[in-house]
Length: 568
Image (tube, rainbow, N blue to C red; front, side, top):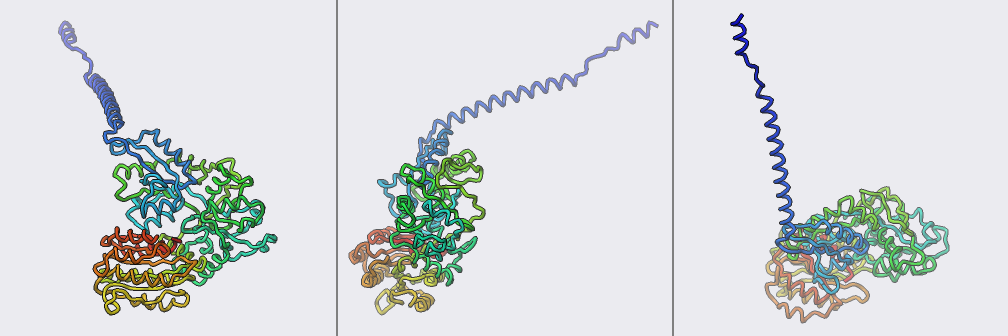
């Protein structure tokens, strides 16, 4: 018995070790997590503190904005500044300036006038991609990133209050056809649409596209060259009143000051919805608001693209800040600010209230816009139809360097001749010793395009390259002939297409002394990087012309359309 007790006494029951190890491990993990969290928080705070030191200093992001949404964009910029943005160790401040798109385009592509426009911007928000396309056509390097829409606004017809209900079934395709109010049973006489220059007024440009589309669009280069399109342009241009205000804003002002229909000298004018809203609610609002009519069918829409600009004037910090601000503008809260300013955005259906004259009618289908090149061609086709068209003399470089580019140049010229509705056109070529010892040769004398269309196309097809490039001598001769044939009351211009420098003949000073002022503009389409841009700019500015710089021959057609669409 005693042996059994002894054995039981030697047996000991201990506590298992593994639960203790688990508890210890959990405690250690928890402490580690707390330590890491604390360290991470410290690092974040240090990082924020270092960032707010802005070791590279302050930087101002300047954004030029079309007037109709400038106030709303300023509100967005204020919200962005409240986030204390830092880019590449720069503290970023936003400066928003209100500027007409035509003035911004001219400044970016010629000489920026700080007295009129403030300092040169790093980003641009016009009312339509039309402007971004024009900038690309003139100098593609100035577009730093693909434009992105921040909101939209359909194009309406602004009409006096009495006329608006009568136009409830009006369609954009009716514009070239309707010439009298009797179609609607009204005794108001002539029906006319004021069409401020579409090269400077977005609503006019989009309205013309809608009239030519005849449906949902888009207008194409082929359809634009058709007899139907030429007929529509001719009728539409003929129906435009004799004295058209230069801008949509001026047209709205004159229409709003009129007591009766047609008292302004015209019946209606195209306008973006947001511009009409601003007109009817601004400090100079008319006593009776104009009424916006949304024509039946697909609606042309202004898309308000944000364009981050490029070029030597835009630094790395500004370029990155421009994109960061764009992303901020597209956030839902900022989109609501733009919606309160009169734009339509996807994230909300909220509309400003009150909004006299603007019903915010539902848009069931958007017009499909023309591509960038066709857009320029539409503007130049309109310029050829409006008021009898322009008087254009083209001087084409046929030096040997143009050989790989000549087919594209021919196609651009041929298309322009095919689409021209009216006006005059002439063609010269230049290199060296083309006509005896002369570096230039007149292929078709400048005259009515309707009479010379076939001759022009034959001359274009016959262009071929040869040695030399005596640009200044050839231009002096071409310019003098064009000046002798000047047609009063029309836009007269010489357009030079070249890819190189002048390599003989007279010098720049001699050429400039032969020029006669700004009544006959010389505009250049410069292909590639071998041109003397400073010299071309000097000549263009002396005559009131322009310089379009395209990277290669693929940009010639859009650039030609842009040059020929302007009235200067």
